[in-house]
Image 1 (cartoon, rainbow, N blue to C red):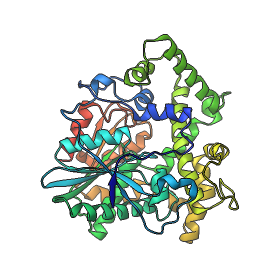
Image 2 (tube, rainbow, N blue to C red):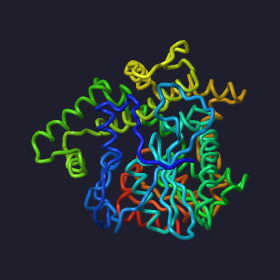
Image 3 (cartoon, rainbow, N blue to C red):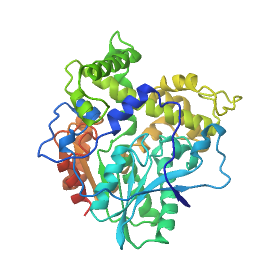
Image 4 (cartoon, rainbow, N blue to C red):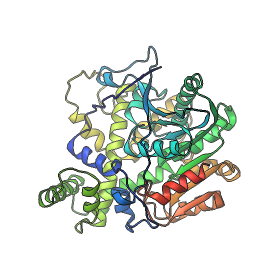
Length: 431
């Protein structure tokens, strides 16, 4: 393993629109705290996150290192030359300490803004910290995934487990580690639960505690909810692109008529107060962000497997090729279509006999309900108004985890992760 500085993700979905969504979902820095999350609208909370002056603060920035793993003789398509190595972040204490793995949410990297915040948060609690990208992130798919077709939890967790074992073996050579723990947010929270169950069988980590932050109950139903928000039933006469164009126009107007000079936290929070965003607009923004992450994942998978779903089998992409046509195709594919036309046939090829119903079941916490109910080391931290959960799913989490589940009344989906009370509760639940 070699340790080094920054790397650059140049995948072509980094268009202006994707940049806007990236900023919306993943940027927000530091300041003080209050008692109640101020954004009552769960959609706005999800998009704009914690107001700047309520973000949990740290006395000093943590010293992190970006590390890498290179799998010898792995076939990497030329188009992904910049992603040959698997990257992750460490923040290690000087003396002996327990180690905490943090698993990122859908499409997120080890050093996204949320992951940087969580790395610092749990380092402050006294953990050695390792931040790992989601198996749905392009770098994971290209450089480390054995299956290279993300979205099927059992396989994604196998990939995670394998990578975590490599990291563990490497760190144990240089650091004193007194135990292992795992946490994650959103899809990373679901992965944490499956990792805990897998480790009960294999015993490589013997996790002391597992914290699930804002988990989905069912990946399939949550993804279907996003798809529905880009459907004609939600958008009416508008097309998804039209909604996005309107949002960009709103950005432009605010940029022109205020004193702000950058898309920083103050700008985003000010935008959250914008009166012209309808519920439909907000849902479409969130769904479009998920769709772009999925498109990124699907493109990487298709090229790595040479499946011919997005890029023709006979076409070998070269550095400098225009990828925009493929991006457009990938971005138009609903998650339901991804399941039916890509993931299920792939799984049936490597695991004959598996049905769509079984695929969906195995990507749900309900499939391991008995284990979750009995394991007193697994905890849930969430929000009652989480937009990826319906009432029945919130009730399922409360019933399954009992007093091991804590819900804030507001925050949407991960909108309050950096909010002081939420952050402190997360630290407390992992002590």
